[in-house]
Image (cartoon, rainbow over all chains, first blue to last red):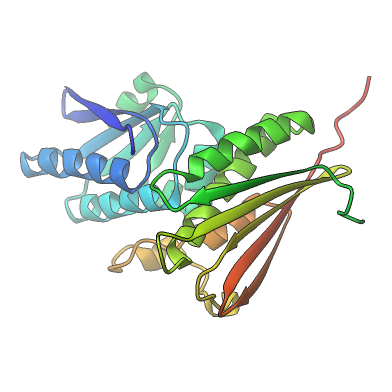
Length: 114
Length: 145
């Protein structure tokens, strides 16, 4: 059973989602639900803090592609920070880094997305 | 290179959600024993997750198991992931790219590409009775003092 949780907060116009646990299909769905709920209220800039999600699988990451797709429709942006090296490598292989941005800290992410 | 006397670890995984994580824990221990780098260990873990998820999906019944064998052959770790599913033809699996996935209904289908990129070699042996994915990772020659 997946033990995945997330914490959502806002810094100005940017929604920060901090995840904990295995980013698989269950985790990915929880992240997308949180993003879509905020998008429904007009938010379109999202930063994921993946510090506590050091293990991912391609199904969970595929759901991030879906989020990127929906954000493209509203001229929104997705970014990440605190990625484990293997998670960043996975994002590179899957091409996510062409359409979303890896930052190395929350401060850098907030500045980059402002 | 004979695998007859090579140290090996064998796992039998039931098809239960997230059970692939049990294989990654074993991989960590084996990689540490072989003095592989942390990056190599993480790459092996990710490749095993993907191979095991594929094996779970190929298996036609939840009562089947997936077998994972870790074989230490000198400076190379050989990993075999075997399912008893209906098999598939890897040459017919199109390599995914994000440009095509954006806008497509199906965003999934990245497992084989990830395994290929993360491991040194990958081979598939697939019949209507099952599939074995054989992956290898060679120990890096770290500079000696």
